[in-house]
Length: 145
Image 1 (cartoon, one colour):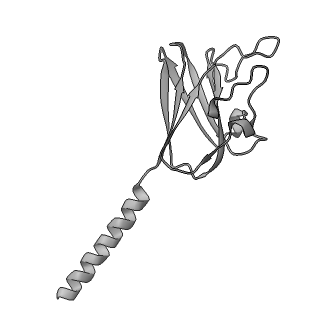
Image 2 (image 1 turned 135 degrees about the horizontal axis):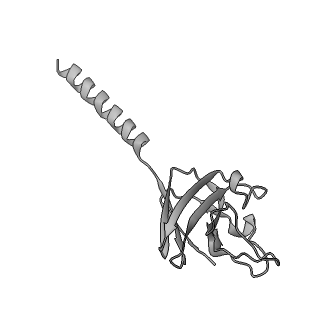
């Protein structure tokens, strides 16, 4: 009888440990700052290929957040696998699902990239914005321009 109880207890503990390891969620937080208390929709896209970078529909992970008079916003992504990524963010103030630009191609709405890369005369590239996600719980700071 003691052996059956030990086996039962061991099996129960094994199942509990296995279940708890599957249920743990890793969090990747994208902290977007410099929102300037405006209203709009914040689009955040994670990319793992340079050809897809900055194309909303090609983001492998994405989030769309309504903001209203905040100066910053934390967006939580869960269980993103380790790998090489670049993040692009823009604040769509007129709800047309794109980053509006003037006649010279300069953005009229706020935008930002991982690594806070903001070249003065062009958009950041995937290579400049790319980072290696090696730890599962991380905060990625992106300051909008």
